Image (cartoon, rainbow, N blue to C red; front, side, top):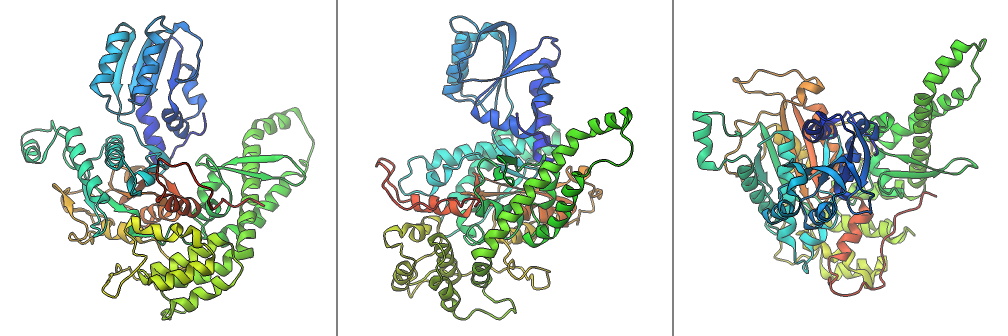
Length: 605
């Protein structure tokens, strides 16, 4: 098991697991086996430690799909997904010769009748409990969740996709399970997009499934609220759904905040950073919320992180000095007690020292120069606030400099986004400059997301009005603010245009974000624990979210004390991953993969 966490979504998920799965089995004094599938293994690993399970009399954790020795004297807890593969594996454990004394079965979501009937047919006498606990999403961070489905991007946006509706249905179920876990029945809204229907479709699916889940439909809502409390009423929460093409800029820009920069420039796999200490073996560091320093630094600008490095170095150097004074048994005993925590803290500091230095190397080499052009193109004005009149003049130095092709592709895309598309003739020249004539999909396939790439004389695109942030204190190379932050702030201030963000069914009672509670509500204190019971804003991005957009959820929550903002998507994007996904959209699923350019993650060197 990986990490435990006292933060937000992970804490809520672990509490629900304890209140359902663990509580059901707690009465028995017998030690138990916990059997998981790949999804539930990842889910449980994200929110608890093996020691947490041991304290609940779970002695062994097993993989459902691996060969296991029978333990007929022990009871087994099955925490699995309601799929045919999982149910077949469960049945195989009991059909001929039972592996365990009894089974407590918990599904992450609704189990289809056919699968449930199969279980009853073969295993009824062994099943002590069978429950659906509505937990089919993945808590990534305190305020971030995913559907753990990177493949959703191709399923939704590829013109060759055969399973778009199935993918949206599954995501809708996962969103409902998130709402159920949070005990929220939100009003659902979506961003109207003239070119795309995914946000609208998903919003309608979620709204219908929420009503079904809470055994309410629109015509019963008023009846229940007047007569009794048997039905779940809409809560003071909103769920906003947007398409990935809503803001193509944020996931492409070079970000200079620590987490976003690290995942963009360094090869970090499964949240694990690998580095080499001086003349030592390769080491690994887990970038998780178990690491308090990571929580403290992840959303800070790299310049602020770099400022703290000398302090970390001094602390590490001081830790190597021998203790002063006479060494006694009592002193040694105290030192030994402190050693594990001390070592953990020192290890974390050393890891961040290396990670920050790796980021700064990339920044000093190319990223700093790229950022000026990127920011001017994205924001539409330079550092002095002077409007960019000729975007090509801003782009040209990037094209003429020997940057690597992926960086040039990103700059070309930002140029095109800044103009809301370009002419075919101009695009062909840009593609020749970057030398990707046979890899044009990196640019052309954005049209599948509803992002204009080629314009015609009759084409007109209205850019969204942005919030004025001219008075905000920002670094010169970090002036861009993700569009989603505008949306979050407008939502909690009740400023979202209902024509652009229509409500589905009945919206909750007056949305009173930013602390402006209604006269019928008692104002809640803004402490972290109490705020969690206040209003929530849930934002879901169809097709992946960037680390900079994740950061916005924390920033708005910090500013607006009365509202917690949670952001989610099918998966988390890096610029490299997104570009490769974009390119792959034109692949025919039946054909064997061709030998083509794929943008590689950068090495740590």
